[in-house]
Amino acid sequence: MYMLNPCSANIWFVVELCEPIQIRQLQVANLELFSSAPHIFDISISERYPAREWRPLGTFEARNERTVQTFAPPREELMFAKYIKFEMKSHFGKEHFCPLTLIRVLGVSMVEEYEETEDKNNEKSEIGRESGEQKMMKNIHDDSAVDEDGKESGSIEKMFKIMKNAVGTLLGNGGGEQNTTNETK
Image 1: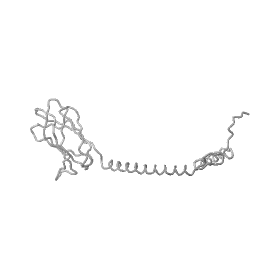
Image 2: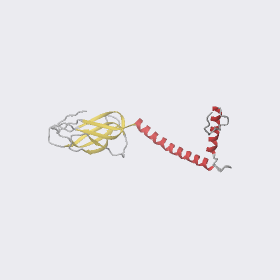
Image 3: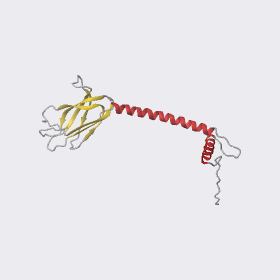
Image 4: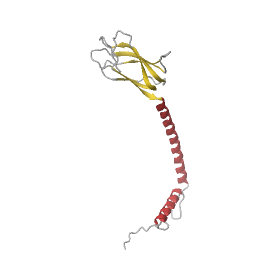
């Protein structure tokens, strides 16, 4: 976007966004040499245009720099907006023109907001599930006992023996017992 207005004029404009978003950041820049830069400006939002009433998002103060400046609106009111009204209240310098080279509106759409909420809920349920798995593992270890050889023979060890026997049977080793000596023929 590029706007070129005399500084003496009442400068305001409305930007229509592609979709309604919760505004997280605004970026404004005047990169033009020999021009006055915005100093104090108001941002208002609305869900429709023409709007009966604009909801103020905040008053922002820019620095007298020729760079992209980022502004974060207060997080108290997270309203979705499709239209943004920019109103320049004051400017730096005494040049004739007050251009705006760039204005960006960054935020989260309704779909992204829904996905963020779902991700948070899924994380909470996974934490609950993990604690349930930890309880189950504790119960398995609590069920362990000591066999006649003095070795621990809990549910895990029993399951391991069953799996070892099953693999041995599939491989043709009979009961899964393997000869651990290295004999050569």
